[in-house]
Image (cartoon, rainbow, N blue to C red; front, side, top):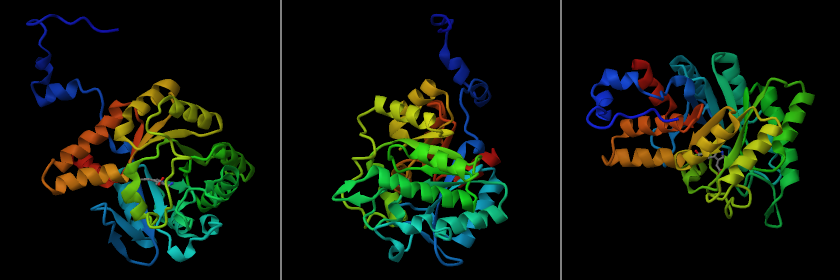
Length: 333
Ligand code: PBG
């Protein structure tokens, strides 16, 4: 229902835009630190950090520095951190066994954060790409990414992460049936309260490029991911995937990438009313940073505007590399 508008000049919509207090009073959406999940890249070593070339300001950190980053995030009021390992190429194999090694980089980081930073939820990524010699999220057999065999490996990976103390598991692989298989295995292993945020509507996107550099998968990747990630042309398929993953036991769902897919976020939130998240991916971050570095846009303002757009589209939260920066800004008010 639309409120009746008085015709001009009785109705002047600019009246409520006149001053900052009036604008604040009628603002429909707000971004808070509660909306943020911070994706971080973890590497081996101690006391080392390095910048990701295609993501200015984003670091790969050794476990000890990742713990410090998690503590900083918790102090800023960021509710969750999401870990992505940069795996030593020597540990990448055909069977991807490092993925479920209880002492792999990701699981070591989970345990270290768990022990030292109680105030933050730890999210992980479930997919084989950081451990796979060919850079794919699943096993490749005769040029095909095989589904069911991959799901078995993902289940082992999920159990290892849950065992290390992860709070939120993020299957990002787009195989069929993985949410149900992971949920069943978690129940059987006594991990009843471990949550799953399904990367349910994940598109085969050009915007993941810098991320693949960050985790060292771009050199390895052969071909593309179009036989498992979604066609950017589709909407209804996203809703079917979300419905399927919720019915298999996902607690939260995600749309990815973010800004180019806000129509999907809106439809998902309206269609299911489930906790809905979007991932503002590496390429989105890199575009804003590159334009800002050239003086072509105001980077701070673009960061704010881009994140608020997710709230307007109905998202409950956003995975964003801007998380600590925006949190610092939000905290000063
Ligand atoms: C791995 C994964 C990817 C991202 C998150 N998990 C890359 C991909 O699917 O190739 C992308 C994140 C980003 O671009 O910031 N399955």
